[in-house]
Image (cartoon, rainbow, N blue to C red; front, side, top):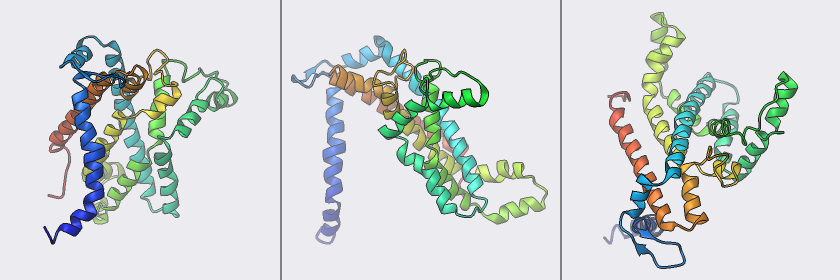
Length: 291
């Protein structure tokens, strides 16, 4: 202990943050999920009543879950595909590669900010830039994208795809690790570029695809700011942008049903945990490592 004391001393700020700001509040929220709590009165223990209500008598829970699942299933594959395409282009040895990487990575830093969400709202408004370009270039009168329930969610999907910089950087690092001599040997055997992509690049890139897929899916489940700003916190129109996290926020800070919101939060934790477990279990069948 005397020899390890300096190490524990340097770890002390992390221990304080973990137990005081992460583990402690998580345990408290788990307890609150079994209570009726409104921030003003003492929690009233109600057992599993919150979870029973979620499962049997909450239409908005199902609505928000459908919206969130649609968002996850659309945005994550499209974002990863676009990120991989850009990484393949950058891997061709372009001049000024660090500049391109910085430019393409920038949306990942800004995309979750309130300012970008406000800008996105202005772009896709009824008289926004998108409709102005459609009219001037093609003579098409576009709808009010964010006010139409048929299109509003797709604007958030496009915003998510635009934030492709983070997985793109990771894809580019993975592409740099693939031995060049494998492509040279395949080329001598007469393999086309397409065949080399599917037989060499993709199999050797599966660990990176797996990592990006898990991380981006978890982030998609937790998406909140764009839906909150674009819908003004309502999840409208007609709950078309009511993300699960936005519904959780409404229950907690709109109606002060903190116990119910805690139960919703723990269900989200379980959903993400199940997805992560399924991803790791299935990875043995399609993720290829050196061994």
